[in-house]
Amino acid sequence: MKKIILLMALAVMLSAENNVVKVVFDLTTDSLPSFEQKVLKGIAMNKEHYEGRLKELEVAVVIHGGAYKFFVKEPGTSSFKDDKALIAAHAALKKRIASMAAIYNVKFLMCRSALARNKLKESDIYDFVTMLPNSTIGLIDKQNEGFAYIPIGK
Image 1 (cartoon, rainbow, N blue to C red):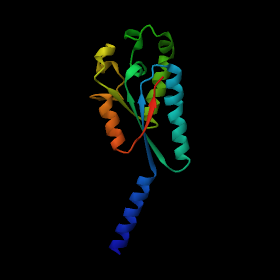
Image 2 (image 1 turned 90 degrees about the vertical axis):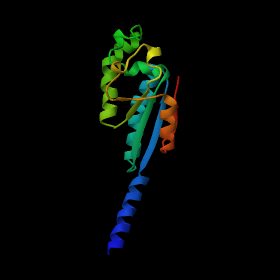
Image 3 (image 1 turned 60 degrees about the horizontal axis):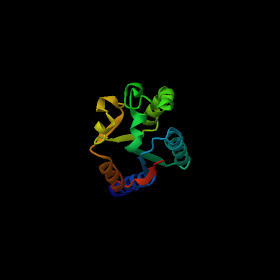
């Protein structure tokens, strides 16, 4: 009887593992429309798609290149202060990105090595963003954990 229960528990665990789909987005775009379409709207649509098929979509976003600007707490006092579209959209973007982290459990991972090049400190970045030594390490780690790779450039 113990063997049957153990086998059933193992089968349930393996079945649950097969119901998880993983994706890592390599986010480098500085385009606000591209960021909104491919990250904010795209992730929500993809989550809904997989949930409708009784699967969980685990999402990680590795942030580097021009994408830093979307994760700055106060872009108006940063090196992005002249980006009028970003400044105008900042309050709404902040809410949408934070809800992606909280509601959809999206892991935002940022390349620490280029913060200084963007005249930023870690304290300038949203608290729900995790710092990585560099973006390459984050992408390697996630792909080795079984995450599908999707680039989001220009």
